[in-house]
Image (cartoon, rainbow, N blue to C red):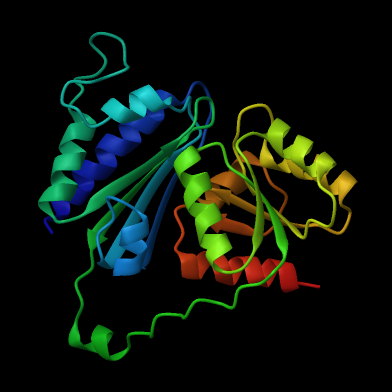
Length: 264
């Protein structure tokens, strides 16, 4: 890949991040590796099977609503004042990524900043291929009861399906208020609260405090489309809490759920 294209991607994303931040804020750039198999991609439309290099750019700025996210990569679309933006920065970034057989995943909430995750195909050498680690098998399921809280309907539905396929009993809620109501009315134990971090009404940490008052022995697992570093910087969660990054595969989900439930 032409290095100048990477520079252009970073410049465009960092300028947008700067403009989204009012006053003092944080800009986080992360890199990593990710492998998507066919099963994962069948569960996550828009994802492509293969080995990818991850470039993530996150900010603590104003965030975006769903309407803005839907138009984000359209040429000449901008939320900036007249004369302060051409509306071509993200369209150009999208074009570069697609030209190089990659894809972009964006997560944002109003008032909570944004995370752009760019996946670019990884060049595999013969040495890399020889050292490849076999894909992890799906962890054992269970029969425990899980209170699942997620305000995005598609993610709530898919996560519930994944967990139910592995034997768990799921109490699903689309809002913190609904989760509290279901927890109060539930007859029997609830073994795990799995909650989104950023939601309307209250965040995941505050919800966990309320739920723990009802079920003192409940385990906690938080999830978010923001990266773990961004969550830590925003101080939404305490250190060392169990956390899983969205989107996740069934293997990643079942392994993490089993780990949290079995942790003593």
